[in-house]
Length: 115
Length: 110
Image 1 (cartoon, rainbow over the protein chains, first blue to last red):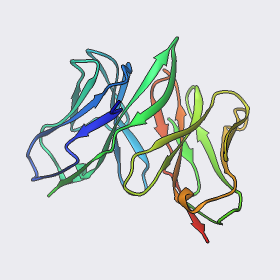
Image 2: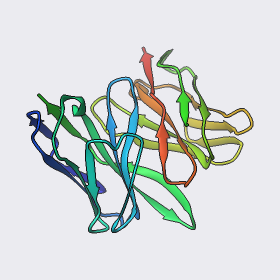
Image 3: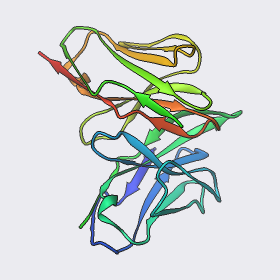
Image 4: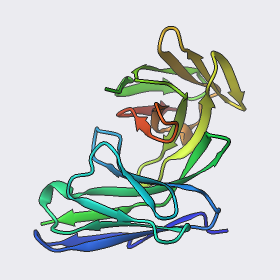
C-alpha cells in the first residue's frame, strides 16, 4: 500500500514553460486535493476533486489547471510557469462517507523552482 | 471569508507540556483538525474535533470550543522528535474544503 505518491519530486522550470504534476493514490479515496506551501503561509488549496471527472477551484487556482480522469489520479498542470509559482506542491486524498470527510493523507511533495 | 490564527513559534523543554492555540473565523464549520509536519516532510494527521470538548490520542490531546471559535493542541511528555510545525485546519461549508493556518513551529529543547 503506497498511499499517496507524487511525480516528480523535484523540478526546475524556466518562465513560460509548462509541466504536469502527477498524483496517485491507492486507497480508493473519493476526494483529492492540490495544495501549495510557501514559507510562513501554511498550505493553500489550489484545486480539489470530489470524484472522478469532477474538479473545483480552491483558494489560489489562477495559473493552474487540473484533471481527474481516473479515480486514483489527480493531475495538476501549469500552462505557463511564473516565478511566483515557485513552491512546494502537496497532493492529498481523503475518504468520505455519508457526507463526512475524514482526515487527509498527503503525498511527499514536489519542489518546483521557476527561474 | 475564512481565516485561522495560531502562534508562529513555541519553545518548550523536553518532558514538559505545551499548548498550541488556534482561533478561527469561517463561514460554516464542520470540524477542526491538527496536522504535524517535520522539516522536509509531508503533513500528517494528528486529530480532529467536530464537537466541543477534548479528544485524546496518546500524548496528544485536542480541544474545541465552537462558541468561542477556538481550539488547542496539547502535547504532553514532550520529546525531541516532537520538534516540528503544527497546523490547525478548518473544514468549512461544503465539508470538503479545508483551510489551513500558517502553522506553529515547535522547538523542543533538552
